[in-house]
Image 1 (cartoon, rainbow, N blue to C red):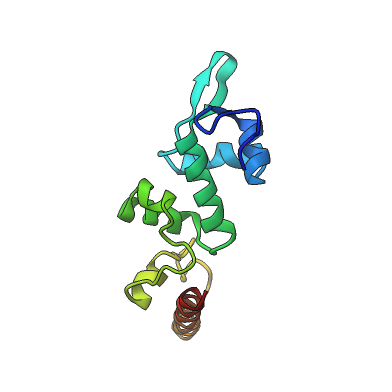
Image 2 (cartoon, rainbow, N blue to C red):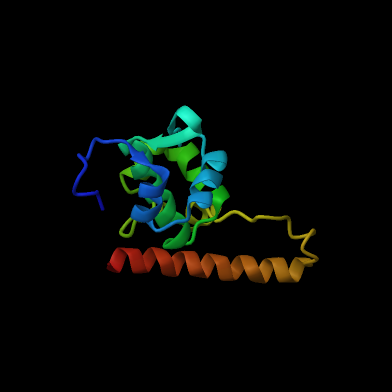
Length: 145
């Protein structure tokens, strides 16, 4: 997904990256606030220029969020635990086998505490059981792919 007129090592504007990845520009700006590893160079008028590494990381974040079903906190944890290079290199990609269900489900962290959502212990236990079954099914489907 590289512009035919630019070298692979060329810097990209936010509109080029937005078109390339298929994500609106405001989402890219939001991701910059959530993922400190995304550091576009800023020039006159605060115009952003993304390095090739930034574009690769944005593509990986996009895949993890919208294809693999991770939450923002899950992707943040993945980057913290495994590093940016690992995420760019495909950690969390199809075919990856988590070491355990717990390791896989830890990445799908809750956005809010169960108590704040008004859930009782039985509902939380049921949701966790469903989450664990989904994590196992996801791991099996990745192995089969």
